[in-house]
Image 1 (cartoon, rainbow, N blue to C red):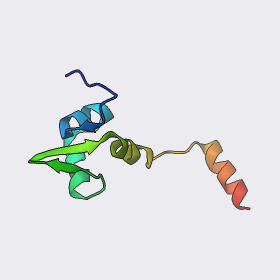
Image 2: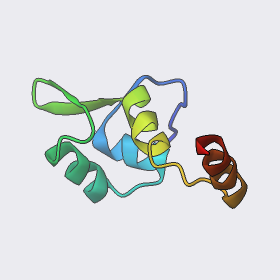
Image 3: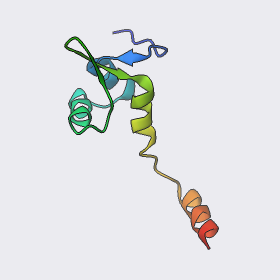
Length: 74
């Protein structure tokens, strides 16, 4: 499947290919209402921005970033 990165809305399968996550995990995030989605008739569509947001909210900071954050709190 040739997935165009400029595409705005993805099916669950396309979202899995785009993100590198499994379709099962995508469905779980939809069920848990962690990932926003829309229904067009019976088809589920996911906005690329929402998928990117899900991935980006789970950022792992480096030790240096954590150290700087702690210094700012003092």
